[in-house]
Amino acid sequence: MTKYFYLDGDKKLGPFTIKELKDKNLNRDSRIWYYGLEEWTKLSDIIELKEIFSSLPPELTTRKHQVNKEIFGTQKTQNITSQIEVPKKKNDTNIKWIIIGLVALIIILLIYKSFKNQTDNHLYESISTSSYESDEDFQMYVDKFYRDVGVYGIFPKKPKTTIIRFAKLDQLHNTTHIHGLSYGINDDDRIEIYINPSTWKSFNKPMRYFLMYHELAHDILNVDDLDEKTINEGKLMYPAIADYEKKDMDDFIESSHALFEEIAEKQ
Ligand SMILES: [Zn+2]
Image 1 (cartoon, rainbow, N blue to C red):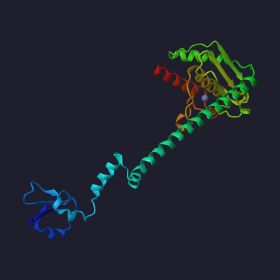
Image 2: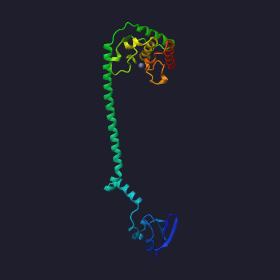
Image 3: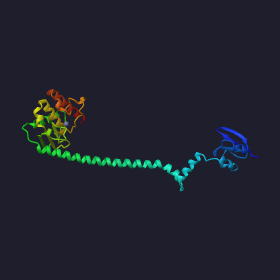
Image 4: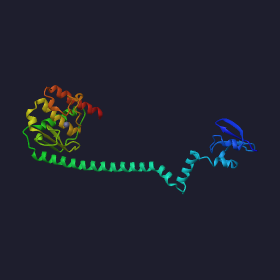
């Protein structure tokens, strides 16, 4: 009668008869050897031991293998394939929602942009139509500005059109620049600045210079406002120039020249 050995981890156990083997804790993958076999062989590959392995439930690893086969092959087992495809479907749904979200966001941004353009245009219309000529010599500030930047080797183009007028900016909605507003930014052929007459009346001489040079720097040098942070306080492009009541002409000269020097260095 054939005697069988089996592997339990690294341990070789045996010899056993078939009857004895039945009582061992074997599975279909257990490695078996008997005299005449060249190498350790899977229990399920040994026909003589069919009565043992056919009574054993299939192993999970074998099962997985079958599942894969079923998915990629033609015959699909309904409940198993659905288990596998559920996460994939979830992913597809997620991607779908992400795309829908992005499209919606783009549409909202476009609507917002066109709405903003409309209100901006509307604001510009009401400012320019309600503006009026002042008897202030605004051109003096412009000429002085060009001379000052020239000292720093900055020679911006002199525009064909210069419009500097009073406009009651504090009576308009949607404006953060209630003291002065520049529309010639990024347009080198045009200086277009509106000054709030009540601001002009209340501002002292250094503050008027701060305001005019601030707007001219926007318009001629295309410089943006600085953030309204304490670190920027005192600078020409600080947005809250109305707080500059205690500044004198020396402060103004220092601030404006600091900006010109900064721009000259970048050139
Ligand atoms: Zn500004």
